[in-house]
Image: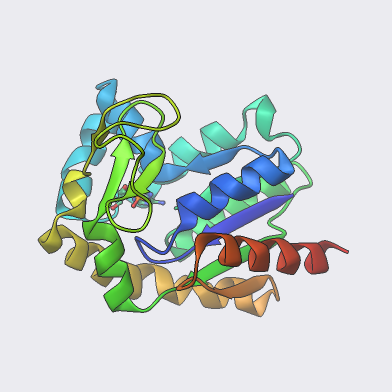
Length: 217
Ligand code: AMP
């Protein structure tokens, strides 16, 4: 099963993909995490991606496509995967379909997590991540047990530099201009599932699980 998680920054794609990954055993692949990891390792892709990420812009399609297709070709994705943050443009969606179809595979469903703008901004400004395992927290709605420390691995929590107010505005603009138009691509193929992402994490997760169950039966 190949599932795409779609939504604006702060919609909860990563949180929901992680829950779904635990339920299905499928790997959760987050393009933003791959870029941040590449940057931490100071690889060519990481250093190239950095300037775009710092500005809140999309990394060029050809770079994002090569990176994700390489990851998706790993043996752990043989039975499928949960893609979070990719594709973000029509070109990326088409490249992914071409690559999967070469192996007789395809996207089963694209889950679009809808959240109003004002909630997105609040979520992003309070978001903190574990530097070690990337687990997300929120200062108000999902704080860690010990301030500044990850519950799971004890790693240090940090705020992503692109979660600053100015860059968040840019990222939301990029989502509406470049990613929203791509929703039609999956809608036309009858693969789009819309979920109200403004509610509690577990309520959203239950909706996604039941919509996917109904879709694959
Ligand atoms: P995210 O963690 O998904 O919010 O992504 C952080 C940043 O990584 C984005 O603002 C982009 O600069 C870059 N990025 C992540 N995924 C993609 C993608 N599919 N295409 C282009 N740039 C991406």
